[in-house]
Length: 225
Image (cartoon, rainbow, N blue to C red; front, top):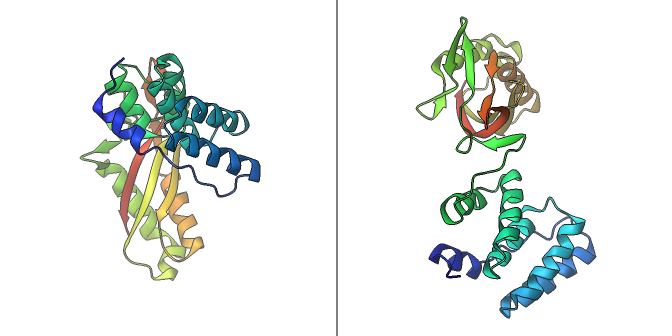
């Protein structure tokens, strides 16, 4: 089966998984797998990565490599399985391969990227359902609520902080907003206060995929204080 140019390029720059935090045995297996790959021995490279996967199935680089190697070996069914797993671990390159190169729909998982769901989440404002995201930013009504909460906060006032923080927003499948501070202040107390204010900012309707509620991620938003 002829391979798309994109995939051939991907094979040539196979991801090198991080060795940090892994056991000595897994480190050794990764080195062996990469050595086989460098020799174009994709069969044995796949076997070594499979051994690692059986021990640590959450290593997204290992999962992606298994998808790529199986595709190279014409094992499309197994390649799809590993790419789907990688997508559930939030690997966007695997999602592109499944959609564009393998003509596959993304499988349902508890959290999915905003680009993969059927219906986006909504926020409720004065009993009206509004789009959570408008023009690549949080809904202006929601921003107004969050800004008021930040201005009223004694912790933030006492910190004398002024500027922007960047937060990653998720909405889980129950409609709860989850906030992670990606670039915050120097104060953990202030960062925690910002997180709490955002997470208590209102009511939300979860995203939908295949007629089921689903958690959604994929937004990093600037918040001015």
